Length: 335
Image (cartoon, rainbow, N blue to C red; front, side, top):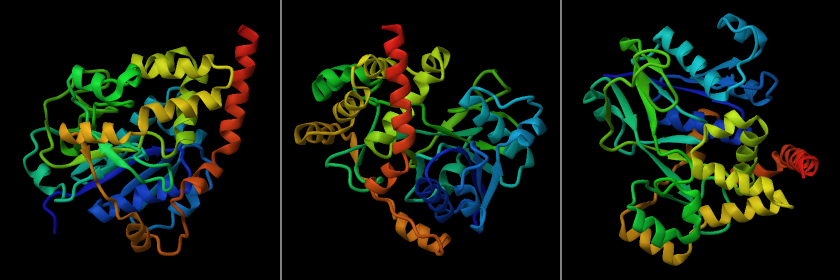
């Protein structure tokens, strides 16, 4: 038996295929429990996931937020996430708890046990970011780029697209946290703190494990998630790094936000042969295969699911169309 038990917590609002893959993957790595908080209490995926052994499902309805001392649902996504994560932490049903999004997969081919054994305080798990080297076919296709390139390297490799990259990535470069629950610290989005809004506690970075961040399972998924930041208000948009905001604002100003957004995604995430070669020379392009079909077949054998980009996008069409329509309407009014 492993010396250290660990679980995963995530607040989710994604298609079933992604949530299912997320849960089954982490169970296959040895997670004791995958705690899923469904941001939409009417999400049909919740009923499916609740039947999987090792998955704990919570519906984030009005009663859930009232039980947490909130009169209404917190407006900020990050606040909802941390409230849910720290609720699980209070129960201490495992030694360690990883707080991750549904599009973030722990990559630990040698297991996480050795990192937990040497951890001092909490465990910081760095992240890589998925990039495309061919047209989207499966939602988990592609390779992974690492952050930390020098500014000259980023400029040489990405050219004009560097405008939208921070430290070589489009999304965050802060990694994720695995908290030792006996310490009773506050689990934030990317770190563990001594208390809510307190200072970051001392921790240790993993030697081998990392987080694979799929910043958008498809181009349309990335665009949908990006534009949601914009329509939820200026404050939420300002929470993103300035280079990501620049990309979203470019799409918002476009006459055709959908076409502009898909074009921007291609600039940022699709690598030419030359870009691949330059990243490989820097040791910053990695192949990290995930055996998700096997994981799902093992832990959810009765659930039929496809990981094709086309099937995934079909579930997003109405939401993306409505969002683009609203953006066009608001742009016309201000214009």
